[in-house]
Length: 291
Ligand SMILES: [Zn+2]
Image (cartoon, rainbow, N blue to C red):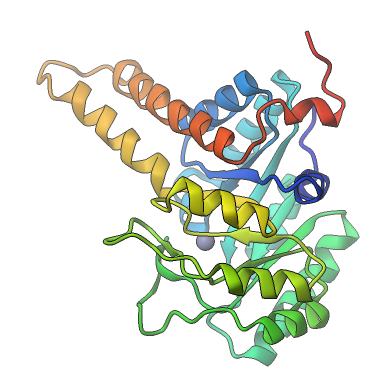
């Protein structure tokens, strides 16, 4: 089918205390791994790119591959822009058919952040594209952005409420103890904060920095309102390991072999994460016919 809006996916998941898994992809093989894994488990899925990925792969290439893949399968697939600080890049995303975007004004003060997000919401909603915003600062490394521990700040529930009202965003990314990248120790999620925020706002929450968070914590966060779970680093590690293993043979030079191994390794994690998000078979609730 054609790409779908992530709005319906996330809202239906939110109502049922599930989460839509959102995977950061980098190239053809990672797109294939995500979509094949999702298709095998009949899960809806969000494919997402950061600005760095677009710099590497080219927005036209990414959009064309994901659209071609969506037409090949009958599960609902959305294409999302992750952590985008640039209004101009968002315009380009809309131009090539992204079905949701995240505008990241984390480096602005509150007033400028609201102004930027509002302008994106106005434009994106005009073409039925959903907007994710973020309030509070999630620590760690994401693309070219680095937020050190001292600068990371938890989302304040009252501020979250104000931000949603001021901007009109559809989903909200919150800082509640996770960080981008891999953790040194075990991350502690602030469940009370999630609960408080969710009780005050009427939009689904998004969990960033889920890589390395224990499954039980992710499940509890989903039960409290996290309806989109971002997975990036946990795909990169097995991919790199699989490539290294194949290339340990000094005579190996065939991209089909090492990238093929990478694809299989990524697909395995994708399926684990779909089960964690409890969306196995969820595609059937979006008009997908059982064969
Ligand atoms: Zn993030």
